[in-house]
Length: 208
Image (cartoon, rainbow, N blue to C red; front, side, top):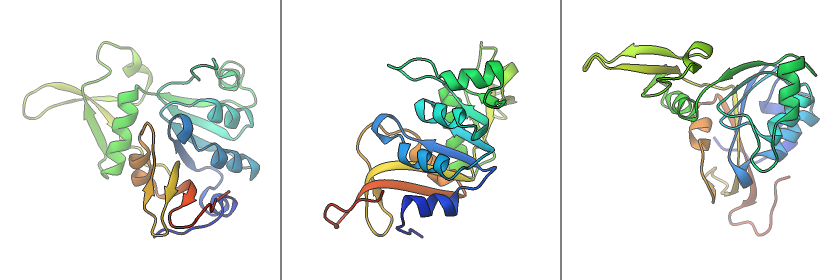
């Protein structure tokens, strides 16, 4: 059931210390305001999940909010390296950071499996790479063809947060731009939050 509330109230209710938290969306749909509110409220020991952790997650790592990062690419095109991410890996500063790295396809399939309430996803991936030896992926044999395939566990974060341009009062959300795995992230999470710039049918109303 959809509920319209302020960002500070939503984060206070939905995001808790120790949660697994996915903030998804690309470019103009990165939920910066929500991530900053999580930091403002002092959340700690978070397992951060994201296809492509960039400046927002670098800030969260730098503030010491993250204990673990599950991701498929760490960097920020146009800006460069994630310096606090690197500090955490190389120097355990501001705290040690556990990591679980996947391919883009692996992460997308993990979200899709979680959204479908399946225990894992099967894919043709990771073949010919050493990533299999360093991350959470298994090999399965197709019972019909005998083909050897990669299996990745479903993602089921405690909380998913995404951003969009507008929503209506019934909770229907519309976004413009490059879509990512926002839908799958929301569907696989126990709790979800969508920040929007406008409530449809309400002139110039903002949720800050």
